[in-house]
Image 1 (cartoon, rainbow over the protein chains, first blue to last red):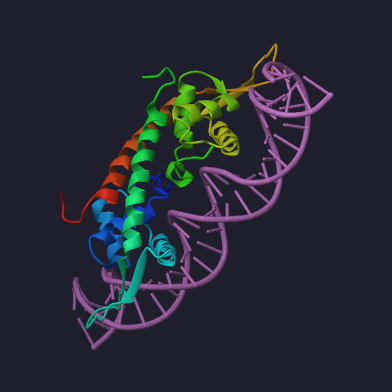
Image 2: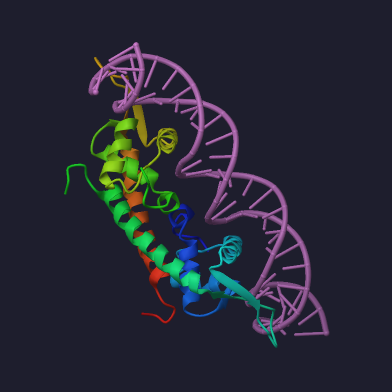
Length: 115
Length: 115
DNA sequence: ACGAATTACTTTGTCTGTCAAGGTAATTTT
DNA sequence: AAAATTACCTTGACAGACAAAGTAATTCGT
């Protein structure tokens, strides 16, 4: 897959993306990887290495917890669940995004002669 | 100044920000530094080190050119002018931003059950 | 039945952009 | 005369993203 948008434009938002999806139900790495590609119409691909790095980070910070699923068939899966702190953290990150979005819009397109 | 938004949320947009300002007239480092802080209502501060790194990068890529101003008073200033390639590049970056914005909006707030 | 593809997770090392900290030097303000 | 401001620049460190590679089981294609 050829990612349409540069990774640097997404950088810093991975945590928010993961938390948003986990908010809607427990899931595991490979599944999120697919869902993110799908949700972005394959314009963005959050690489597996990045994903698992983020999982570790989020778990250390207490925003998610993990547990092994009891697969009766197929490969074993490590599931992640969002914690209450995780939900609070998610809300903060959404606010951050809303603020950043406005500022960036102004800085990238805005003019010096106040409009 | 305490920056309101995390640097990682801005990462990757510095070039677009600089080119946008230079589009509106030649300028120099310290001036852009001030203008960016002002334009963002002091919610974001593009650090000088970052700024000068970006200047070097943009000049190497041919998107800007530099020249020393002939100050009759005050400190010497190194001015930057955007090139034609720079203007084209700027337009591309704006498009990138618009695309990234939509994708991020979906990934951060969007649901799995298509809405 | 057999090889190829897919599912699923993980580690190691590298790259890049950002920045903290520090420095230089002239000018302006107090 | 000291302090603040204007203006530029360099060095080294850090963190997040990722390429590449590996492991191992399962499922698909023929």
